[in-house]
Image (tube, rainbow, N blue to C red; front, top):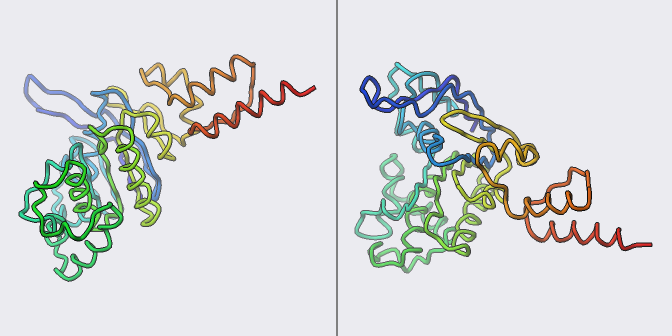
Length: 289
């Protein structure tokens, strides 16, 4: 599902002494089927940006188009239910959104609210459970009696069960240790591949962004400053640093190695195994007679 923002601006507390322009002349497209990372410092407008994608916020100026849905500033938009069925959002600490008596009811609440039959909601739920690492023996349990990790998986299942065509992830691994973060992002990556979703990830973890995303949007002070593929973005080192963004550790080490040995190739790798293989290859070449 293609996403396009044209001349989008957003004002908080418009017309008051506290008015603040959070987004400024946003013109950007998110390719259908991409895994897009939205990166930028705190206060750069990332959360405001993604909340326009399912109508949680309306643009003060400009147009937001998500597939066939068009939201224009100053014009009434009423089809929020259909839009939000297509655009699933996972926020920071999604377990805080749980409220039903049982795991079953909580997972099925979303699709039933969208008008899905009870039978289809049950079928979808049973398909999603193993994908998020939950056992069906937990279905009649109170979600509030589960571990923190299980609660988060229940909340995520409640989003995925509607099979959204766009999946928006706003710091979904907040508070998790490195192993838990990797497990959670692997879950979203598998869902992305299996369902060909357009996935949008907000994260301050550059290693996560580089590992999972194939397309990047860099925001700074409410403006889109960089857009491109992963390689296009991480080849602009000085520009990234100018926005106060660090490189993933693997990429940082790779550039340092190239500088030390005056290597001018444009190879880039984002995981440790490939970086080590690259370094080993070049050291072996130097040692060869």
